[in-house]
Length: 256
Ligand SMILES: [Zn+2]
Image 1: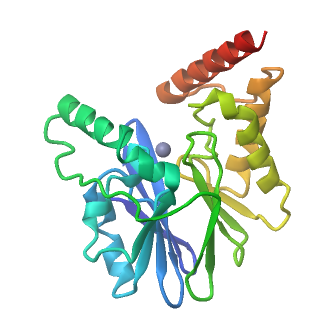
Image 2 (image 1 turned 60 degrees about the vertical axis):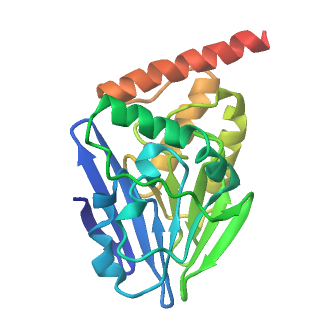
């Protein structure tokens, strides 16, 4: 069961923790309807949200199609009014999303049997705004970690939901060919003075820390390699850092 926390009026964060890994989603409550930002890893992860949602209609938004963000959709008591995602997120449901589920079901018998894959049915390319009544969730494409990544801006609260577009202690680089575009996208958000809090799916929710640290990391990765990282990284991030470095080296080699 996820841990639920109301971090400000009408904004709940929910988080599932495994021994080696944790992931978080967000529930935004408007006067008319609500938005659920990611369904996490399996249907049980969504069970606690139904009580808060009550009878309110809600959108489900996928920050991107990686398994830890969109596998819990079968867990809602009522169907969402729409499932929103980037057009590339929709495409991935015909491609790597079912392939990953099959692979993980084979690797861990029984653990993922309850997962039902439900693709987005309201898709966009650049931006989409959801008026929830008194609060708005503005969705914007921000490719980088994956090609289908989006972020969710709530102008009334100065708050940015990042999915995996930024992350602490460091972001996961899957597409080094668009590293510059990713960095530009993050820097454009960082230039907004009205942005007060950046909430990633993995890592620190303190102020703008996740956004600022991800920008510094990606700048160092494509520049002087002078990283400001914690003295110890857990296994996942230590390995990710090495993979990021190797990918950036490959890119440099190709450009020579
Ligand atoms: Zn993730």
